[in-house]
Length: 501
Image (cartoon, rainbow, N blue to C red):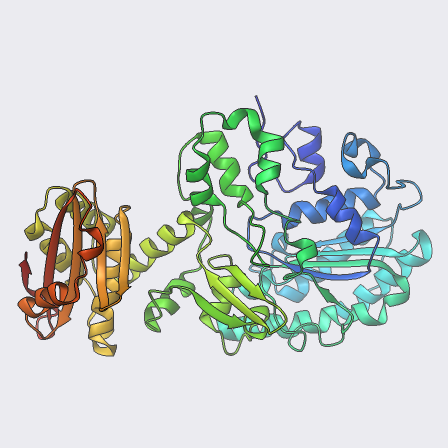
């Protein structure tokens, strides 16, 4: 039986505990032997911390932990032994203490592990003095900064505090440039790619690996790695379904990887669930999608500048969704700076849609998901009355201010969310040669074409389905074809009438 390292971010714990390990040491070795200053971003729970922990053990000379791994032979564990300063910002108690105090305490703790006693001083002075003294006594320092942006990301719903933390971190990280003679390696990880101007203004030589083909598979699990390390336990698994749920992440638009946290949880449980999403989704992201009425997303095309950085004072929703893992690159043209984005997989899409439905129907005391199940069962038995009642129940729980912004878009967004969450094959706003159908829904026994109108008759919606032949592509399909025209009444903010043919 394999032991799955779910939630284990420490390399030593993983190896000594006999957990399954996907060997990424060849990738890591290449980085450590070809450069000095690196910056690397990936979504949470993707293996960044384990990568940094692996580097820590390499430079600490822990040869025994690497038995049987690729790096065992090419790495000279004695010659490459270096003092390591490993800053794990996620572990700092900056919510109870001030961030400056939390960082200062951590520097003194690290110094003590190297038998150093640092004099009292400012945060910058202490950081600089520690690097200088460590280098003088033990050789050039390996500086590992894991989740450099955590004290900022945690306060994106409190922008004044986030800005204060950003300013402090900018000052703190500025020490790195003047400490170059004392440094062997600098490796910085995080979720967000704040512009160099806003955080690393002095580190012009910091190489950003985030969109590099060299690191596309540094974290995450490829299809080949899945076969190699987990092949025996996958015999009874529908691989196409597994890919649909947990694969799809890419930063180059080419080779994709699985989310390791979700994949390992599935291998342990054997149940398709939204594992990664359950570990924490910032509510401000969902509220931004709702309040800015940006849904449905569809495929997006952004520039490299758009997706590669964001400004805390002017948060752009799409870059933030990409950097936090809710969107991924499906096609990249770096030569012209173009990146097409979409959902990576079903886990992310379904989870985000469900949270967004809750955010819209925020006055519903129950679970809006129950309305989706009602619609699902009603469509299965061609009960359009129950479908309309369920939709109206959701519409009735949308706060008044959301209707005031754009009632037509709010209505269409809610309908799209409800139908997309059905789990059946759903296409929204499908283009045909003669027009665009609002939604096509395919169940086991029926093919539905839905057309939604605002302040127009249900018959007009039905006539449009017929006139534009939205069901014509399914003429040879043995399932019964059903056209449904729906009229949304602005005055009552509910479906006022519907017609079926």
